[in-house]
Length: 203
Image 1: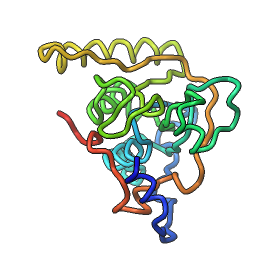
Image 2: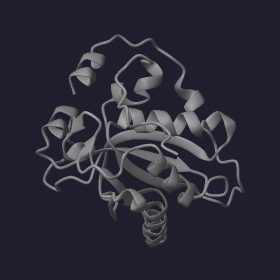
Image 3: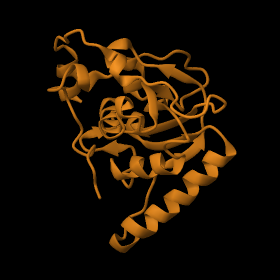
């Protein structure tokens, strides 16, 4: 947490964020879909997804935003400090707009599991608290079924033999709040900023 706070005060240089946005590359009749994941510090989650699915290379991700979701209905429009207090129950999360004709939802769910530690409850590395929980927020029944199926496959293939169990929540997506602007694409603006050690390829 201290590293995150310290890195917030670092100055950031203006840059062109348009390279992190793409138009649909599939048929005009196809609409983009939304995937929402929580896996600890949202800077790192956004960073690793965009590094491996850069919009400029037409790999399926069209745009991303970091924000807060999954919290108390009474906690409207929470800010960073409120979420970090744990009192609102919101998770730091990544919202991905993607082209399902280029990348499947199942592939994104698998990548989500590859790039964090889903067996630690309310914790990623040194970051602790409910805001850092592992969660998949689904936007349709099809996404719910896919998330459950992929989770079961990942559990059996990568964790069962080690005696570990995935604790990731799989719940229906609720209200979304964009995080403050300085959080968006933070690690691309501040490459030396805080990064959680769990945000890497685990297999």
